[in-house]
Length: 214
Image (cartoon, rainbow, N blue to C red; front, side, top):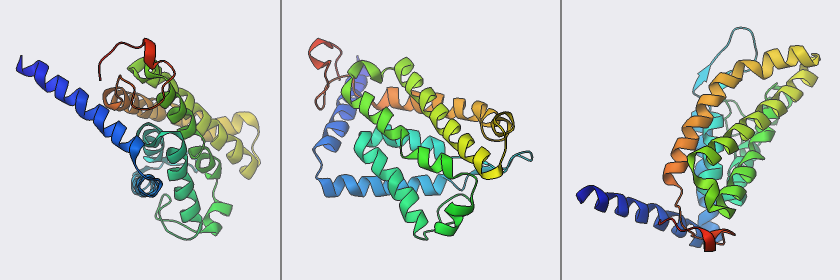
């Protein structure tokens, strides 16, 4: 009985949290987006250098995926636009505490950074629109699509920047990161499936036929 009460409280809490986020003013939502940009900059410093590629493994992808879940499409996008734009203005929060337009123009990772702004739109839009997209398997599918988009965009730019052919670029910018990004995708899918309410808190198109509680 006690366990059931705690579960009900948690479900109500997560529903209230997302409903609260939806009802915030634009200024408050922008502040949350800026906070997520700061988090992305912080986890960007968690780096693992691989000896055979100029692209390190970082924690950025984890924060990018999470931004779409927590902030939705518009403000998830804004959080990563803040991250890239403010970093371009000189704030040193890219990986290795780098910053500035000079860094962006000379880094092989620009393609990944640009893709960071795209994937929260996909994740946020589907998670906000469909309650049925909030389970673990649908979320895992979304996260896997998102990491493939990031890695393909990053690989395409890396190949162009370093004048590599398709196969060489894939060896440097795509294949080495698949195991890491699969793990990040699964982790964020688990978090999102746990956090996302299974009831309507906005304008979901399937709310009328979805019977699950909070």
